Image 1: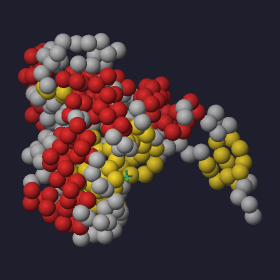
Image 2 (image 1 turned 30 degrees about the vertical axis):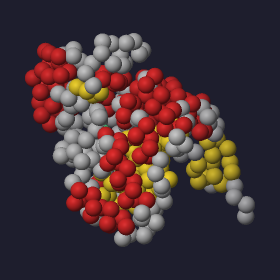
Image 3 (image 1 turned 90 degrees about the vertical axis):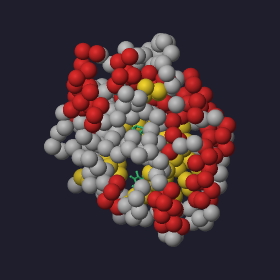
Length: 346
Ligand SMILES: *Cc1c(COP(=O)(O)O)cnc(C)c1O
Ligand code: SF4
C-alpha cells in the first residue's frame, strides 16, 4: 500500500495547498472551502506521502463534514465542564489533562477537539502558570497528562521547561504525553526531544495511531528512538468507519505496535464531534470487533474499548460482556462464543 509519491512540502496547511498538490479534487473546491472555513486543514508530508485510502480519509477534508447532526456537540467529552483554570481539565481526582497547546502537526477530520484545535496555539504563559500553580496546590494530583492539540508540536525547550516545573511538584509522579507526532511528524523526535522527555518524574508517551499504513519506516524509527530511551509507550486508536472498523485491520495495527514496544491501551468509540458522523460506527459493531480480537490475538495487544460519556462524565469500558448473571450462577462466554456456568463458592 505504501507506494512512494512525489515529495510534498513539510506540511500542507490549506485547501489551496492540497489542491496544488493534487490531494483535493478541484471540482469540489466550493464544498471543501466551506469545510475549510469551519475546520482547520493540515497534513504533514510524511502522511501526505502515504498512498493509502485509510490514511487519506483521516486528514483530507470531505464534503460530508458539512453534515452536522443534532446529537453532535462542540465539546463532546465535556473538557470545559471540569476546568479549574484555562487549559486544565480535572475530571478524576488523581489526574489532570493540561492542554499545553492548541496546535497539531495534522488536523484529523474526526478530532473530538476539532472546535478548539488550531486556535491560538500555545497556552499563554499566564494560563500555564495558573495551571501549574493549581497542580502544585492540589496534592491529590498524581499524574499530569499533556495534551492539546498536540504537546509534541511544542519545541523541546518548551517541553523541557514544563517538565522542569512539574518535576518540582513532589506529588506529581507521572507525566503522560498524548501525541500523534512520532507517527505523523517523526523527524521531530530528535535528540533534543528525547532529552526533554527523559526528565523526572516518570514519563509515558501515549501514541495516537489508527492504521498500520501510518507506521512508515520513519515513524517506526521514531518509536524505536523513544523506546530505546527507556520511555514506555501506550497507544490510543479511534474506531473509524471505513478506516479501521474490522478485526483484521486492527489486529495488524496492534501487532505492529507490540513489536515496536507500544502497548495498545485504548480503542475509542468515535466521539460526537460535529461533522463526524460518516466516521462513526455503532457500539454493537465495535463490540463485535473486540470479541473477534480477543480470540485471534495475544491479550497484550488487545486494548480496552472505551466511550467518553458525552457531557464530561469520563471514560468507561464498553467492550463485549463475557459475564452474565444467570439463575444457576454466572453464565460466562468464551472466546469462541460458547457459554459456561461459573459459581462463586458459598
Ligand atoms: C481521558 C482523560 C484522562 C485520562 O484517562 P485515563 O483513563 O487515565 O487514560 C484524564 N482526564 C481527562 C479529563 C480525560 O479526558
Ligand atoms: S492530532 Fe489529536 S488533537 Fe490534533 S487534530 Fe488529530 S486527534 Fe485532534
